[in-house]
Image (cartoon, rainbow, N blue to C red):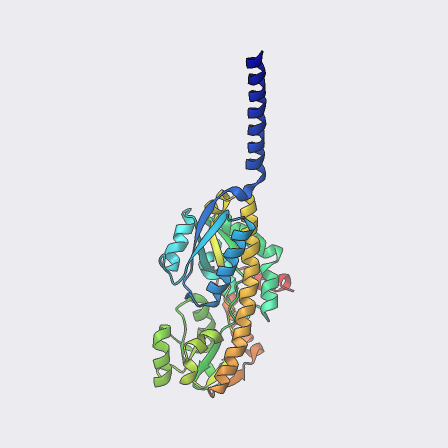
Length: 334
């Protein structure tokens, strides 16, 4: 009898223990340990690194240490194109992306977001990033390109032009050599304005401006200030011609390997972080423009309506963009 009682008690205890363990395993997703790498090309003292550090700390806290993301700045893990390929191939890595680069992975419609004068302000861009239309695009990209956008709302400030004269009137660009990145969106924006695109690295641009090799250069005001171009060019024109859509993504296969709770937390925290990064860029832009004024840089406000009209042909330059796509986007952003 004693043996029978012991056996029954032991069996009952064992079953109860198994049931309790199963409950813990099924009901506490946050106990699962996952390590991810995050790669970007910004410096360790950039706004992006600052915001990413706070974001990954928040994610670690919300998952009770279950989701641990290690950040690798300054292209430590390879070029951006290399790490994006790692992500698409299923690697456990989060990567920096922009709209044009993401579009190349299987959903070319997305590249329209790199177009000029698409939105009037950052609020409209953010509204579109939260719209059902944009969410449909992210699903299409995940399905066709195996790339899951965690967020694409890490907006830097729109890009402006610094040079040897005011470019408030777009006609002033005609025949002018302007330093541009060798990207289709920029080339298709500036060539119709009569500008002569000139491909220089950031390091080469200071000397080119100083020596008159180029008449101007375009970039975000924060990058212009950091590169000290205001020391040798004294006219900053606030064109705001292109608002870069920037953010972070991971391979869809790797994303789906994560527990559902972790996926939801990643999407939420990266989108909130994007808003913070954009706000921080705006604050620093305002401060840096004041600093450039103190250096003797004259600030001009561009005739945006004239620029928008002059650059309108950009939106007919791709067969991947239906004729009414711009109107659809602007309606969704209201």
